[in-house]
Figure (cartoon, rainbow, N blue to C red):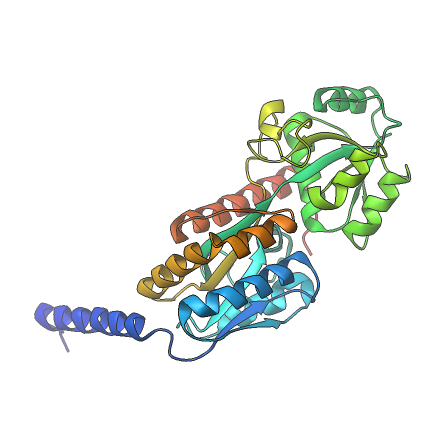
Length: 321
């Protein structure tokens, strides 16, 4: 059977009209917000803040659900397998989402296609620190020191993101340091403060008090500008380090097939919520700054970070899980 062009045109118009109608009625029931990590962390806190305030903008309850497992992939897969109707959303850090995309060989979803970003939410810098026993006071001095003492320096990593960030630093600067893996960033940070490890990349909020007290030395914060929390520490852009323009971000996502009109509706409402004094203040208390974006801008950030980690894995030979 040959389908004539005019019938194809009618079908396309009908599909477009259906999508518009769906967006106009959206949402007409509660929306789920999946948190793919355990309760209590920064992502979970972000989800509670957003669910409380975004519900008012949507006119329907936004229910946050923790679905932890396999480093965030269980909850992420739940959203990837949900109907593409905007009623099951994901909130996750860009670090977690993009590092999982390259470190797990057999993910049950396609990180580039099965989910799409709705908006960036907040962003917070990471802080490159050294133990004060090291004479290095700048990134340049740290790199030179590591080259003068090959295989002597080490760094603690409390997860895949911390490890990849350090490997990215090594890749762009030629710095030499051996990875000491930990079960979490907390123990890794404590051991650096104790002098058991030399270098590390950690969340600025957790690390800044140790820099204040002189128990660690801050060499650079990720991103294009200095942090108001530690104004004396230069940004990675200032120091000339490549690959660290993006801070650790938090992003809200939906099924990759979600109708564009619903994506736009969600993005508009998210932007409204992000700039309310209550949300801005709460994010600031967690060490994050509001990071507004269009859906396409957020998606571009996610894809760019995946590409970056792919290159790091390729160049460093890190084994996939």
